[in-house]
Image 1 (cartoon, rainbow, N blue to C red):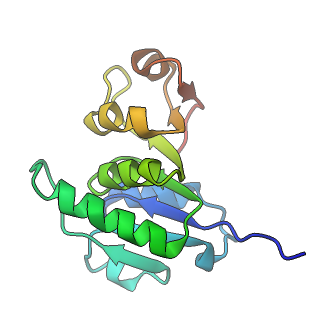
Image 2: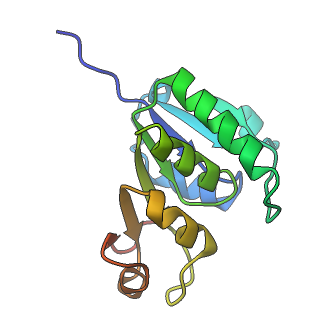
Length: 153
């Protein structure tokens, strides 16, 4: 019997957030098992993984809807099992799209702020199946589903 291949999407901005997601992955992880959603820059254009590039969304709400539709299309095409995000940029449309399609979602709140909820965390919380935080105070701020896991990165 053939084992089902797990396919994971990492959705994040191209800077430090994406670096943090990579730090969480096992070093021996098969590169074919995950896909990346991010912005294109000198560093991300050299990634060996299958990468879908999105324009920076910033705080302008208008590009979020086309990005959401594109995420739905790509997630269907790639037959993804799990989406992991730490929020920034494409993270929000990606987690909403994944939830809409019934794909398991994991949000990781990797923030230097130990006492206030992040904007990405506030919006992503309702769409996450697993919501992880690195400070015990943050688990209390978000609610019952937020799980304190300690220093993540």
